Length: 383
Ligand SMILES: Cc1ncc(COP(=O)(O)O)c(C=O)c1O
Image (cartoon, helix red, strand yellow):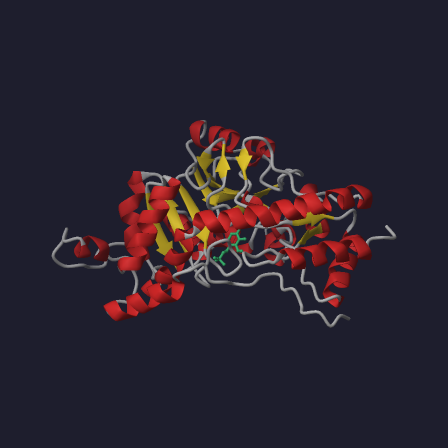
């Protein structure tokens, strides 16, 4: 045990004008969805990413659910998803009756292995979900080629980690027909719980507004394009309060500062832990040429699951919270219900047992980072 303060895995912090903007929203008397601050978030996201349209949602999960609705999925359809992914990366499509067709990941970036994509496609495939793990882009040229250009399939980017990351110079989230963003507390930019759907295919814009507004054409009504609004399609309520948008806008306006800060935290871990990794047989993150990371998280791959667990528990005893990440979806009870078994996706299975995420948040102090690295060295001295 230690008498030093604990270092959490994540800590939300203010970037600047969050509270002032929330007060302004209240003073304006508009705190339901799509007020002034939501509109400013939409404009900022469209301007900074180059996406055709941005719509705030109550979570990334809800943005993915909107994507699934927009795809018009029906029972029997298949959606290709990496097994090493968040539950809702698959569940959003399963909710619409689709079957997840899992694929394995690459051992370097931990993103979908694009060389295995072709084999996962069949006549029932309707879409491919590309998750940019840790904010490092998938091989989007190959994925778009196999899925979109050659087969005409929709590509949905799960860009929960990757806002402002780039692949071949282009912003993540602007390759597929749609991309989902997360503004959950753990993300680079947050409003506690939140997300956004980026739309790159203009044919989807109007229907997306309708699905997000309970299946009504209310957005057209507010723009004066119809004189009454009514129920025109499926839908739900996916728009966040303008109070949350006010908080989020303040964070997004500080994107350059936040990203520079996260980059320096990431680089400090990388430089400080490189000699240790070599000695301990651990592996640090890989960012291939052509990828600019969004610096969402910093992970290490330990030599074995036993060593990962020992290090994770040792750090915890010393007041430092480092955490594992996704359990392979194909081995979850839901995954097994489609007949998937151990051994189906060996890279996902292997990585999941050996991965450890280190504390990473905008206000992480260099002294705390030094303490984390020192404890890692100390706990693994006998390896
Ligand atoms: C890749 C990925 N997609 C989606 C989500 C869900 O995000 P949210 O909590 O905003 O629904 C997460 C959560 O961390 C995630 O890691």
